[in-house]
Length: 112
Length: 117
Image (cartoon, rainbow over all chains, first blue to last red; front, side, top):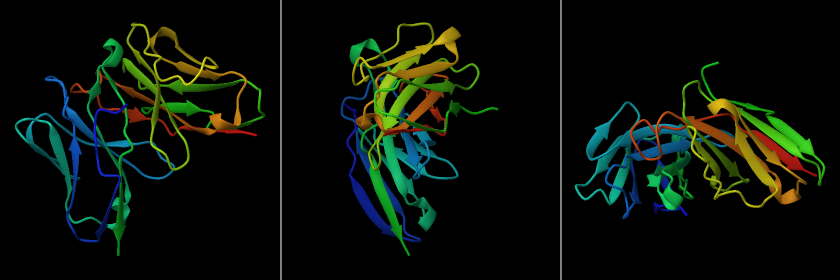
């Protein structure tokens, strides 16, 4: 089972800012939070990774509160091409392994 | 190439046949994952290799599924006696780091689409 919880779907319009929040109540001390984007018929691709506070790159920003039990991916001024599934991941330590398991993700639909 | 390479890109087989799917990870990446994705669904974890450690096979759905990784590099996922419910896209990913640690960014291949008739 994934260690994260996200909304199943979201809708937005072109030019708006989109914020997708992920809950990871049991995140380990050493874990980073990573977000991926997946378009149909493609494998997921890395968007952004952070440990705490705020991280920004050319694609998105990631906000992480001090308790690190949640994180918010912010996509500024979305376009139709941002329609995709967005996954939030933290490490899964079941069985003594530190691996990455995907949840259902958030399906973002951007409308004209 | 510099990316993760998977073959075949498409495989159509008959129920009951065995299939092998290959993944060539990025050179130097110690972690290798296999995931399965059915149409319209999320990624289902299958197996995880980390360096020379014993793999985490906890996601394999049945004993018809097995995987190996030779020399810490190329991996082969084998499905024996395929069933129609095995039809899916099989994705391989590799990374430098462990799990949620820094450097654990996953790089995915294009996937192998398996259709079992």
